[in-house]
Image (cartoon, rainbow, N blue to C red; front, side, top):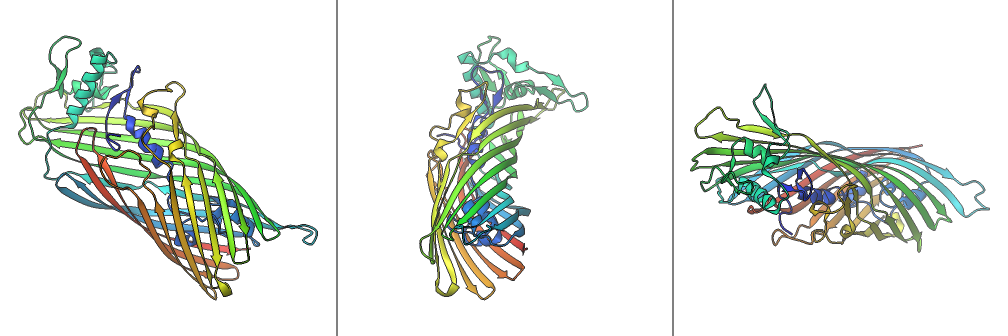
Length: 504
């Protein structure tokens, strides 16, 4: 698989628009991952566990855990997140930080004791509703410095254009499609990025022949690249769940989740030409906004094998999503000898609606309660079927944009956590390991992610409070465009949440 994180602009075969094909494959994973989340208690234990109940996080983890409730409860979980990135590209390293406040979880659980206790083995039921932040997209990284290359972004634009013209998928006349000029700024507007570069005189044809090849007007080497990629937004879910307790041994539950995706990506490639003959520099800017909604369903069960040991299992359908992808692009040049020709322009805003089927999920785990109510140890293994993800569109069922073949593999992510109790106080620790989901590779780099966490808690009669800290680390490989050198960036996440809860 080539160019997993590239900014490649590719022409759709048989269509009259271009798109960043690989963005859809990248987004498929980004919108399907679920980080350690939920209340401070569960985050301190390494995330949602399959065989643990009595916490609002079970609504999105294993809804059978609602069956453990004997009192109603309301909770609120604010927090913060800070993400540090250390990007290595060519011979340079750039470090930056990004963060802010978040709302991790808010929930309401209504517990109900079943009447006629002696006549029925159903001891109680509970229903719940929660808002949960599944994933925070806020992160950024930069690249650049003193390093130079011989292959520029404009070379990729030209190669792509020439291939499309030679195949007959694109004609020179389409380069002027949608041409307009902003009377206030002088910037030109066109439908195609290739046409934009043509109309700001960054590329030219070799002759008047309609099949003639194009070339960049600035041919000097080397090129000094720099830029950044900035993500904002989040993946959140509203969950409605119901569970029952059968004879204090078997707990069954189900939940319906409504997902919301909001993700914006700003990408910039700036290239300087130290030996410039025509253009001193070129700059490409891209704004991508993605807004999606989805739905999934989860069934779960927890069984007490003995008073000290319980096992849990839950399965979740794929999340069925509808997503709108909006794209805005701008290109500009700085000329050696200024003239009256346009030096900047934008493509017309472009919207594309498509569907995504996320991965099937299943979790299995167990919890062992220590003697004397001293605490417990819990562990889970989460299966995520990334290989089964699908992308589709009503009018464009085939093509490179929705082909996930060779991109992802199925994974099993283990989690373990422990809680120690001393009267009303709690001490917690946990770890979650997220396996590298990529089947294809840009470079020999394992993109696993490890999270370690810890927390404290206090349980009163009507009030409780929990706090946790979570640290995660992951390396990923990236290309600034298809054919460029490969860089790597290390992300270090530090987050903290505080859960305030009331029983009634």
